[in-house]
Length: 406
Image (cartoon, rainbow, N blue to C red; front, top):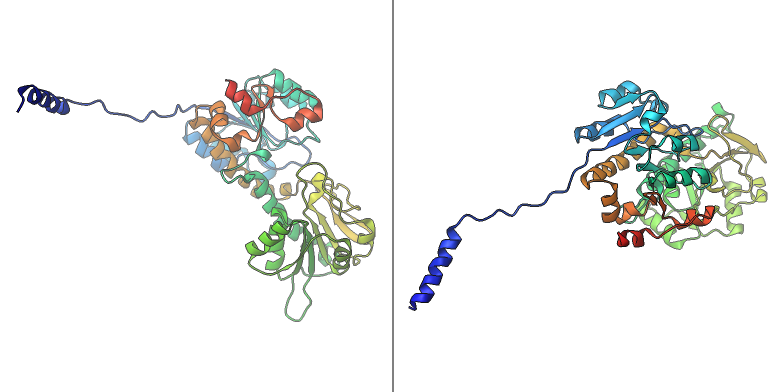
C-alpha cells in the first residue's frame, strides 16, 4: 500500500476520534409581556377578553397580567378570581393602558386611546360604524399596532372568533324564541319543539352559515320542523351534510318564502353580508301575513337586519310588536350569555398571546403567521387596511409589501 495514502487514512481515523462540536437548535427568543385587561365601557358589552383560567396560564409562562377592577363583573368573574389567578388588580384605567398588549372586546373609545402611551399592541373588534376617525389618527400618531380579532384567520382559513360567536348566537336565538313563545312572556303559550300527538313548532331560518347551522341544530334537537333559506346552494348542501339529515331547504324566492312565513311560529334572521348591509329579504307585507304571536329573532341586526320591520332594540328593552308579530332585534346577542362568550374568546386569545411571547414580540408573529397578519389594520402606526382607508379617506399601505421592504 502506498505509504502516503496510509498516512492520510491514519490522520482521518484520528480526526474522527477527536471531540466534535455539538449542533444545538437555536431557540426562539421568549419575551415577557405585560397584558392589560380594561373594563369594557361600550353600551351593554358584558364580555371580557380573558378569563381567570387563561390569566393563570399566562402568568405561569412569565407574563404579567394587569386587570382593571370589575373588568369581569358582567361575566360573573370577580376581582378575587383574577388576583388568585396571579393578575394585578388596578383601580384606574390609565394603569391598564400602559401595558405592552391591551386586550379588549369592543373597539376603544377616544378617551381610552388617549390613555395609551404609544408603541403598544391593541387587540379588539373592528367596527367601522362605531370606530371614530379621530381615535384611528391618534393611534397612528402613537405608533400603535392594532389587530382586529374578528378578522384573524386560523390555519384552515376560518375566522375562529366570528365562528365561535356565531355558534353562540345560533344556539341562543332558539332559546330566545322559546322564551317569547311561552305564556310567561305573554306569548301564545307554545312549547318550542314538540311532543307526541301535538304539531311541532315550525321554524324558518334565513341563512345557512354558522349562525343558521347552530340555530337549526338547536331547533331540530328540540323537535321542531325546520326550513332553511339561503341563496348559496353550496351552503345548503353543506348544512345538510353537517347535520346528517335531509331537512327542508330552498333558495330565497319571494313566493316560496312568503308561504313558509305564513305557517311559521319562529323566524330567525341569520343572513350575513361579506361587505356592506345585510340584504333585506322579508318585506313588511310578508310580516303582516305571519301568524299573530309568532316570533322574529333578527341576528342580522348587527348589519342592518334582514326584515323590513326590524329596528334595533336593547337587552333592557329587547322586543316590540309589529303586525302582532314579536320582534327581537338586539345586536351583540353573545353578551346575553357573557360568561360562555368570554370563555370562547379567551380560548382563542390566550394561545395567541402566548405565541406573541414565544415569537419574541408581535412583529415576528405578524411576519410568520399569515392568518394573524390578516387581522392587522395598524402596523406600528401605519394604516394597512384598505377598507378603513377608503371609508375614512386615510392613506394606507399594503402590509405584505411593507414587511417585504423591512
